[in-house]
Image (spheres, rainbow, N blue to C red):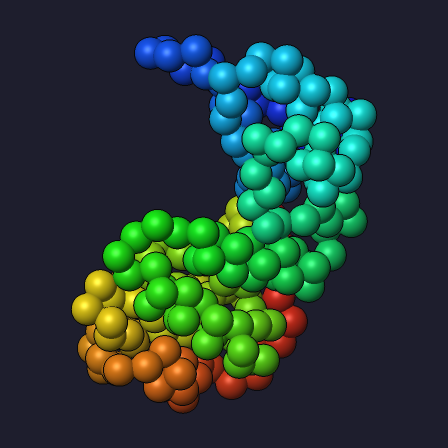
Amino acid sequence: MLPHREPLQISAWSHERRWSICGTEPFQSLSLIDGSTDDLAEVARAARAWHDGAALSDIRKAVPFVHLTGRFEVPDLDSARLVESEWQSMRVEAGELDYVWQETYQALIEAAHAEPALRALYPFTSHWALRFSTTTRPRMTVVGPCLTAGSDDTYGVGTGFITPNLGLFATAHEAVAVAMRHMPSRLGPVTLGG
């Protein structure tokens, strides 16, 4: 096993012949790969490739049921690369969602990512609210406003969690601009949160 990979988690479904996998990294305990299949031989191939240290993209090529979360491996725990990995995962996830407000949420993620000052911060979501931190997981230091994407195609900005007390906006870019005006100055580079 590579030291920057946890053992592959394999779960059997209880009501049908199906297995799920999840491959995480140990520092933040975040998923790098996941997926489910009814073919146990595929699960074994995925486990072998994960264990042997195959690149994530090579695991996906060899075992098609494997889903890449967008995160990439950062063995040296470089905080800037962890930020980049988390942004990439959020962008992948936003593009894959199958919810009514998927386009609204994706527009919010893309607008925030387009802003260099926000892109330099560690992003995270909870209940579809976009937040930022000056430290990575596992111990984040929340900074700045909370951005939300509504099912009514509006975007909220607030000082609290999912409370748009700074306003509702018609575009993601307007919401990001307001959030930027309420960000503390001189945040500095993101550091490890552990």
